[in-house]
Image 1: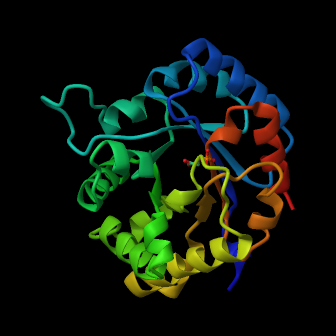
Image 2: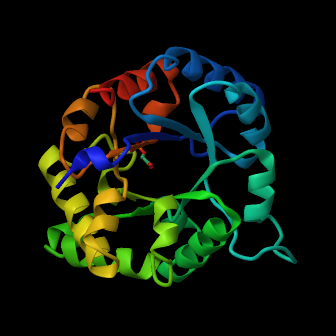
Length: 256
Ligand code: PGA
Protein backbone atom coordinates (compact mmCIF):
# COMPACT_ATOMS: atom_id res chain seq x y z
CA UNK A 1 0.00 0.00 0.00
CA UNK A 2 1.36 3.36 -1.03
CA UNK A 3 0.65 6.03 1.56
CA UNK A 4 2.35 8.67 -0.60
CA UNK A 5 -0.68 8.69 -2.92
CA UNK A 6 -2.62 10.47 -0.19
CA UNK A 7 -2.29 13.90 1.32
CA UNK A 8 -2.44 14.09 5.10
CA UNK A 9 -5.35 16.21 6.31
CA UNK A 10 -5.40 17.60 9.85
CA UNK A 11 -8.84 18.95 10.67
CA UNK A 12 -10.10 20.62 13.82
CA UNK A 13 -13.69 20.18 14.95
CA UNK A 14 -14.50 23.07 17.24
CA UNK A 15 -17.96 21.65 18.08
CA UNK A 16 -20.10 24.24 19.96
CA UNK A 17 -17.18 26.44 21.00
CA UNK A 18 -16.00 29.96 20.09
CA UNK A 19 -17.99 33.09 19.35
CA UNK A 20 -17.36 34.86 16.02
CA UNK A 21 -14.81 37.23 17.56
CA UNK A 22 -13.05 34.36 19.34
CA UNK A 23 -13.06 32.43 16.06
CA UNK A 24 -11.37 35.31 14.26
CA UNK A 25 -8.52 35.35 16.79
CA UNK A 26 -8.15 31.55 16.93
CA UNK A 27 -8.10 31.13 13.13
CA UNK A 28 -5.54 33.93 12.76
CA UNK A 29 -3.37 32.42 15.49
CA UNK A 30 -3.61 28.91 14.00
CA UNK A 31 -2.76 30.29 10.56
CA UNK A 32 0.27 32.12 11.93
CA UNK A 33 1.60 29.07 13.76
CA UNK A 34 1.11 26.70 10.81
CA UNK A 35 2.15 29.16 8.13
CA UNK A 36 5.27 27.33 6.93
CA UNK A 37 3.86 23.81 7.41
CA UNK A 38 2.97 22.78 3.89
CA UNK A 39 3.20 19.02 4.33
CA UNK A 40 -0.50 18.56 5.02
CA UNK A 41 -3.85 20.26 4.55
CA UNK A 42 -5.12 22.16 7.58
CA UNK A 43 -8.85 22.59 8.12
CA UNK A 44 -10.88 24.14 10.93
CA UNK A 45 -14.56 23.15 11.13
CA UNK A 46 -16.39 25.90 12.96
CA UNK A 47 -19.96 26.62 14.14
CA UNK A 48 -22.19 28.09 11.42
CA UNK A 49 -22.22 31.59 12.89
CA UNK A 50 -18.41 31.68 13.01
CA UNK A 51 -17.98 30.91 9.32
CA UNK A 52 -17.87 34.50 8.06
CA UNK A 53 -15.20 35.64 10.49
CA UNK A 54 -13.25 32.39 10.16
CA UNK A 55 -13.21 32.60 6.35
CA UNK A 56 -12.08 36.23 6.54
CA UNK A 57 -9.28 35.41 9.00
CA UNK A 58 -8.15 32.44 6.91
CA UNK A 59 -7.85 34.42 3.66
CA UNK A 60 -4.40 34.11 2.11
CA UNK A 61 -3.29 31.50 4.67
CA UNK A 62 -2.87 27.72 4.71
CA UNK A 63 -6.00 27.21 6.79
CA UNK A 64 -9.21 26.06 5.10
CA UNK A 65 -12.60 26.42 6.75
CA UNK A 66 -15.27 23.77 7.17
CA UNK A 67 -18.76 23.52 8.66
CA UNK A 68 -19.97 20.85 11.08
CA UNK A 69 -23.18 19.74 9.36
CA UNK A 70 -25.36 20.38 6.32
CA UNK A 71 -28.97 19.62 5.49
CA UNK A 72 -29.86 17.25 2.67
CA UNK A 73 -32.62 19.32 1.08
CA UNK A 74 -31.76 22.24 -1.18
CA UNK A 75 -34.20 24.68 0.45
CA UNK A 76 -37.59 24.92 2.08
CA UNK A 77 -39.42 24.65 5.38
CA UNK A 78 -36.65 23.16 7.53
CA UNK A 79 -36.37 25.58 10.42
CA UNK A 80 -32.86 25.82 11.82
CA UNK A 81 -31.18 23.95 8.99
CA UNK A 82 -28.46 25.11 6.56
CA UNK A 83 -28.15 23.99 2.93
CA UNK A 84 -25.04 23.06 0.99
CA UNK A 85 -25.47 26.03 -1.36
CA UNK A 86 -25.60 28.38 1.64
CA UNK A 87 -22.35 26.93 2.96
CA UNK A 88 -20.62 27.13 -0.37
CA UNK A 89 -21.48 30.79 -0.77
CA UNK A 90 -19.96 31.64 2.62
CA UNK A 91 -16.58 30.30 1.49
CA UNK A 92 -16.66 26.97 3.29
CA UNK A 93 -14.68 24.22 1.55
CA UNK A 94 -15.34 21.26 3.85
CA UNK A 95 -18.21 19.91 5.91
CA UNK A 96 -18.24 17.28 8.65
CA UNK A 97 -21.11 14.81 8.26
CA UNK A 98 -22.25 12.03 10.56
CA UNK A 99 -20.30 12.99 13.66
CA UNK A 100 -21.15 10.65 16.52
CA UNK A 101 -22.56 13.55 18.54
CA UNK A 102 -25.03 14.20 15.69
CA UNK A 103 -25.89 10.50 15.60
CA UNK A 104 -26.16 10.24 19.40
CA UNK A 105 -27.96 13.47 20.32
CA UNK A 106 -29.71 14.59 17.13
CA UNK A 107 -31.11 11.42 15.64
CA UNK A 108 -28.77 11.09 12.67
CA UNK A 109 -28.93 7.72 10.99
CA UNK A 110 -26.84 6.19 8.24
CA UNK A 111 -29.68 7.12 5.86
CA UNK A 112 -29.60 10.82 6.76
CA UNK A 113 -25.80 10.81 6.79
CA UNK A 114 -25.87 9.36 3.28
CA UNK A 115 -28.41 11.96 2.10
CA UNK A 116 -26.39 14.83 3.57
CA UNK A 117 -23.20 13.48 1.98
CA UNK A 118 -24.86 13.35 -1.44
CA UNK A 119 -26.19 16.91 -1.10
CA UNK A 120 -22.82 18.26 0.00
CA UNK A 121 -20.92 16.54 -2.81
CA UNK A 122 -23.44 17.65 -5.42
CA UNK A 123 -22.90 21.26 -4.33
CA UNK A 124 -19.11 20.93 -4.59
CA UNK A 125 -18.20 20.66 -0.92
CA UNK A 126 -15.58 18.26 0.43
CA UNK A 127 -17.01 15.89 3.03
CA UNK A 128 -15.42 14.60 6.22
CA UNK A 129 -17.62 11.55 6.84
CA UNK A 130 -17.43 10.30 10.42
CA UNK A 131 -18.11 6.76 11.54
CA UNK A 132 -17.01 4.41 14.28
CA UNK A 133 -18.10 1.85 16.83
CA UNK A 134 -19.44 2.42 20.34
CA UNK A 135 -17.79 0.76 23.33
CA UNK A 136 -20.27 -2.13 23.60
CA UNK A 137 -19.70 -2.98 19.94
CA UNK A 138 -15.92 -3.05 20.44
CA UNK A 139 -16.33 -5.19 23.55
CA UNK A 140 -18.57 -7.59 21.64
CA UNK A 141 -15.89 -7.99 18.97
CA UNK A 142 -18.02 -6.59 16.16
CA UNK A 143 -16.03 -3.40 15.38
CA UNK A 144 -15.06 -4.64 11.94
CA UNK A 145 -18.65 -5.50 10.96
CA UNK A 146 -19.99 -2.18 12.32
CA UNK A 147 -17.52 0.10 10.55
CA UNK A 148 -17.73 -1.77 7.32
CA UNK A 149 -21.54 -1.65 7.42
CA UNK A 150 -21.47 2.10 8.20
CA UNK A 151 -19.02 2.65 5.34
CA UNK A 152 -21.33 0.85 2.92
CA UNK A 153 -24.52 2.57 4.09
CA UNK A 154 -23.02 6.05 4.33
CA UNK A 155 -21.43 5.83 0.86
CA UNK A 156 -24.38 4.13 -0.87
CA UNK A 157 -24.96 5.63 -4.30
CA UNK A 158 -21.90 7.89 -4.18
CA UNK A 159 -19.96 7.75 -7.43
CA UNK A 160 -16.33 6.80 -7.82
CA UNK A 161 -15.72 10.29 -9.18
CA UNK A 162 -17.21 11.90 -6.06
CA UNK A 163 -14.95 9.81 -3.79
CA UNK A 164 -12.16 12.30 -4.61
CA UNK A 165 -14.02 14.72 -2.35
CA UNK A 166 -14.70 12.32 0.50
CA UNK A 167 -12.49 11.96 3.56
CA UNK A 168 -13.53 9.26 6.01
CA UNK A 169 -12.85 9.91 9.68
CA UNK A 170 -12.67 6.78 11.81
CA UNK A 171 -13.85 7.93 15.22
CA UNK A 172 -14.34 5.25 17.84
CA UNK A 173 -17.14 6.76 19.91
CA UNK A 174 -15.56 5.59 23.17
CA UNK A 175 -12.48 7.70 22.42
CA UNK A 176 -14.23 10.99 21.64
CA UNK A 177 -13.79 13.62 24.31
CA UNK A 178 -12.93 10.95 26.87
CA UNK A 179 -9.15 11.20 26.92
CA UNK A 180 -9.11 7.54 25.84
CA UNK A 181 -7.33 7.05 22.53
CA UNK A 182 -7.31 4.04 20.28
CA UNK A 183 -3.80 2.62 20.19
CA UNK A 184 -1.96 3.34 16.95
CA UNK A 185 -2.38 -0.33 16.02
CA UNK A 186 -6.14 -0.27 16.73
CA UNK A 187 -6.52 2.93 14.67
CA UNK A 188 -4.46 1.47 11.83
CA UNK A 189 -6.42 -1.77 11.85
CA UNK A 190 -9.85 -0.12 11.65
CA UNK A 191 -8.75 2.51 9.10
CA UNK A 192 -7.49 -0.48 7.09
CA UNK A 193 -10.90 -2.20 7.37
CA UNK A 194 -12.57 0.98 6.08
CA UNK A 195 -10.05 1.12 3.23
CA UNK A 196 -10.67 -2.47 2.20
CA UNK A 197 -14.44 -1.87 2.31
CA UNK A 198 -13.90 1.09 -0.04
CA UNK A 199 -11.81 -1.19 -2.28
CA UNK A 200 -14.73 -3.66 -2.40
CA UNK A 201 -17.23 -0.89 -3.14
CA UNK A 202 -15.11 0.92 -5.75
CA UNK A 203 -11.57 -0.24 -6.60
CA UNK A 204 -8.14 -0.70 -5.06
CA UNK A 205 -7.01 2.55 -6.70
CA UNK A 206 -9.83 4.56 -5.16
CA UNK A 207 -9.21 2.93 -1.77
CA UNK A 208 -5.51 3.80 -2.03
CA UNK A 209 -6.34 7.41 -2.86
CA UNK A 210 -8.95 7.95 -0.11
CA UNK A 211 -7.86 9.94 2.92
CA UNK A 212 -8.85 8.16 6.13
CA UNK A 213 -8.38 10.10 9.35
CA UNK A 214 -8.37 8.96 12.94
CA UNK A 215 -10.32 10.97 15.51
CA UNK A 216 -10.81 10.52 19.25
CA UNK A 217 -8.63 12.34 21.78
CA UNK A 218 -5.81 12.90 19.30
CA UNK A 219 -3.45 15.45 20.81
CA UNK A 220 0.04 16.87 20.54
CA UNK A 221 1.39 13.96 22.60
CA UNK A 222 -0.01 11.03 20.60
CA UNK A 223 -0.41 12.45 17.08
CA UNK A 224 3.02 11.51 15.71
CA UNK A 225 2.64 7.85 16.57
CA UNK A 226 -0.94 7.62 15.26
CA UNK A 227 0.01 9.42 12.04
CA UNK A 228 2.99 7.13 11.47
CA UNK A 229 0.60 4.26 10.71
CA UNK A 230 0.17 3.36 7.06
CA UNK A 231 -3.64 3.58 7.06
CA UNK A 232 -3.93 6.75 9.14
CA UNK A 233 -3.85 9.77 6.82
CA UNK A 234 -4.60 12.52 9.26
CA UNK A 235 -6.72 13.43 12.22
CA UNK A 236 -10.04 14.93 13.19
CA UNK A 237 -9.34 16.75 16.41
CA UNK A 238 -11.88 18.12 18.87
CA UNK A 239 -10.60 19.42 22.21
CA UNK A 240 -7.00 19.98 21.15
CA UNK A 241 -8.06 22.04 18.12
CA UNK A 242 -9.40 24.81 20.39
CA UNK A 243 -5.90 25.77 21.50
CA UNK A 244 -3.92 26.99 18.47
CA UNK A 245 -0.54 26.11 19.99
CA UNK A 246 -1.63 22.51 20.64
CA UNK A 247 -3.28 22.16 17.25
CA UNK A 248 -0.18 23.56 15.52
CA UNK A 249 1.92 20.87 17.27
CA UNK A 250 -0.34 18.21 15.71
CA UNK A 251 0.05 19.86 12.30
CA UNK A 252 3.80 19.85 12.90
CA UNK A 253 3.70 16.12 13.72
CA UNK A 254 2.01 15.56 10.35
CA UNK A 255 4.89 17.12 8.41
CA UNK A 256 7.16 14.08 8.67
P1 PGA B 1 -11.85 14.89 20.68
O1 PGA B 1 -12.99 14.96 19.56
O2 PGA B 1 -10.53 15.13 19.96
O3 PGA B 1 -12.19 15.98 21.65
O4 PGA B 1 -11.92 13.52 21.26
C1 PGA B 1 -12.79 14.37 18.30
C2 PGA B 1 -14.02 14.56 17.48
O5 PGA B 1 -15.12 14.53 18.04
O6 PGA B 1 -13.94 14.74 16.25
